[in-house]
Image (cartoon, rainbow, N blue to C red):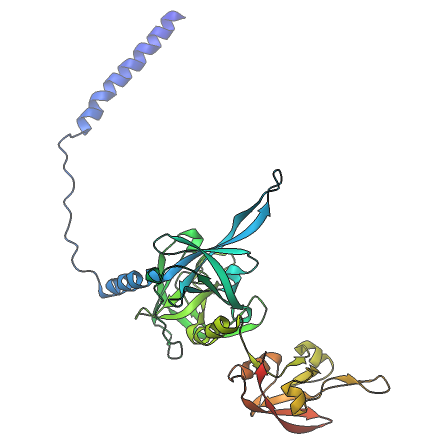
Length: 363
């Protein structure tokens, strides 16, 4: 048995000894590093992307949302991270614009600037219907670099765009693409439609939400808000709320803590309810706020008569000549106005049509 073990060991040693010289012959201790080929100038589009990123990166922030949790054993309350997202510096007062869904349901917020300093943030206000929110940090002004704001009214399909954010928690990430389509519609967290949305093929992944979409001049033209993907990862279809909406809504959120929308202070029936009772067009008024502009204009709500029968209220069919066929139409028309504007409201009542004049109030 011992002889067999010795024989086996000799065979192994001979095999290894025979292979060693071959491996040594393959090595070359004098092997030099490969020479570096001249690179030449960067392409113009590369230079543009680099310049945009270098300018805008200091304006983009990383947002961590925190919630309170009580330790099961010690009963101590501690803050734990709930989620992450992106945002950008709006002004030198430390206000940060992001998506509402990034900060929804969180109790505290932490903002990390591009220099990696962390700041506790407070909620200024939100416009959930637009998926927008504003935070504020108390950082020194020298640390605050407000992002340049552009316009979304003159965008064209095919324009180059650049998205900066923190996908999957990886901060300061740049992705590029083009505007794939304009005038898209997506649903906000409140189930209200957001109109005029920008569609892009620039990669937008979880964590990019709230970050800016930039044009080739480095100006913000939108806030990245959603992706269309069954897997949750970028599938070439991302969406951004256009900056013209942001530039109109954010000042209201800063002043009032919410989006002040013009309206009539009325409650409308859901579209399916109106269709069930035979209405083909228009929106049915269910109730009218006491002392509201609608009441002053004479708009009638749905009510009961003395016999207990339901009397349908006015059916609004047009505002300033623009047809209203659904509740979305109603809100879309009013979005073009300001609080205090006067509108002509065409209603169907008792088989006829009547035009009333109403002053829009803040809702």
